[in-house]
Image (cartoon, rainbow, N blue to C red; front, side):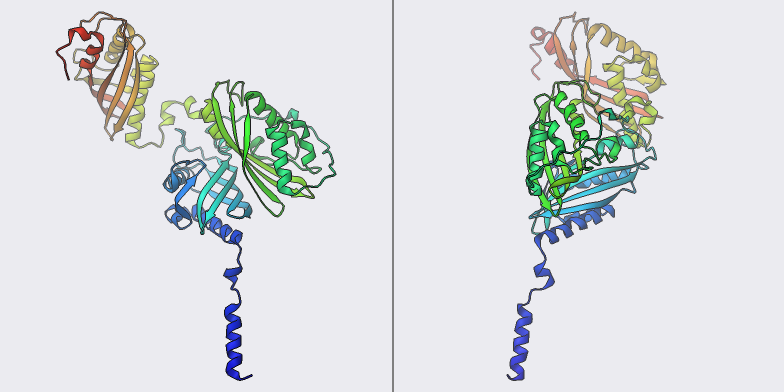
Length: 474
């Protein structure tokens, strides 16, 4: 064969040979995108997340419904509180268009306050399970379950709660003859034990010495015992007697299987120290299971405890038990002014804690709207005792909008109450009424020094004595 023919043949073969990129699997490409996303987050480069997230990204996690911008805001909040936050990838599982990461978030609470609690300097590490769906090399969907509740306990924002470990005893796993594929076995575990509530059958899914590890209980410690599932399941089924669950998806790679389930139930009994709220709530769990010879040898479960406790009313940061000064530490002057004003509405007026006037009203305070009142805290206590004591004894105030600068606060709120005493020469009518009010307060060193108030007196009189105000048409 002539030389030119050989050259042509070699060139043709080279052109026909697949490149490394061409043979790379969809799963491999998707893993690379997700790992790049983790690198950007760890480097605090949120402005570059558009490189890996689709413009129509949908989040089923903490920033649900807020898209990529909501995700960025959430990251900014976390990075502000935890400047050294880092996500360590423990496992990566991919199948088709989905990728799941099991990892550990580690961070030290040295930054901005969380839920009113100033930085404690405490270190936390918590389990996080995230599943991503990708299309054309971009992340279009995310499902997240992170032990945020446990993290807040570790850093001192929430009180710690110990599980009763007395229920955990060594189990001898029941041997089974039938070997099933990992995904089918994982589905059976959830359908039979969790959805079907057959807690006594949990052992047969686990290898000897295998069990639940990480996430729950005891702040992420490993508990190699199926009894944990029975303990957690019993607590859930008792607290939510109409508990229902469904599997959202199952993916697998190698020996690992990931399941995410959605759950609902009505809170009818005590759960994690929270009395029954009788609320219908929903939450999610993610299971990460490792199989060997058809049996589970390692397992991680992460529930959306934070979301669940918010719904049943069990989310009460330790800040609520600290003094106002501690809660406002780290705030800007405008934020502190807002906080003082909200205490004025919530505690002074709505809770009738008139004694806090000594804390938030300066001795020289003067109100141009009520010039006849004594200056300082005593004047505020006097008018409150009249308005909320005899005229509208059940008076409540609901703030609609509040805005502040370094030395001023402005607000709009709605008043509601039953008219029992004389108001503007109108004897008590017994009517339940509502009216708006505007207020502007000048602040100095965290206290009121001057204030102006303008209630909608015409609107209120229209409700109290409409037959006497027919001429008012505006």
